[in-house]
Amino acid sequence: MLHVSTDINQLIREPVDDPDFPDAPPEWTRDDAMNIAREEGLTLTEGHWSVVRALQHYYAQHADDTVINLRDLHDALDECFHQQGGLKYLYTLFPGGPIAQSCRIAGLKAPYIASDPHFGSVA
Image (tube, rainbow, N blue to C red; front, top):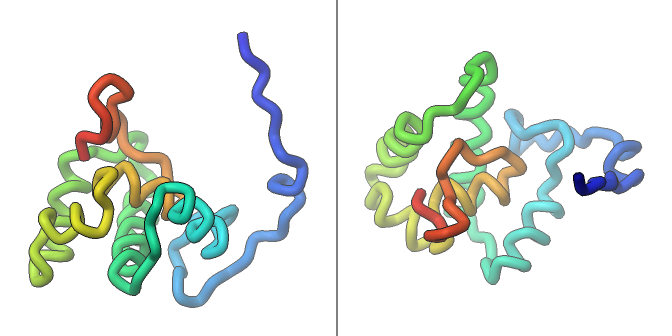
């Protein structure tokens, strides 16, 4: 069994409330999101931040659910960004998968099978 160590700075860091992201997880910061995006080759635009807000809001609304349903989340994002082109638009923002990649940037755990290590991102 592998031992996973935790960065002490992550444990003692005070949660930062960002008024632009009212539904953000307590440990999430905009700087963390920008670092993850940079590692994945993305430059975050207002479109990206809108998706992050929508994801964080969706997760906050479904906080009591034991499991986030991938299909429901997929449909909710498609509907939320329908005016911009729905999922096609989201794939232009997040080529690594509009759910898998954007969840990483939003500080959220992607739903089960949003990405498959054998096939890459599927959502």
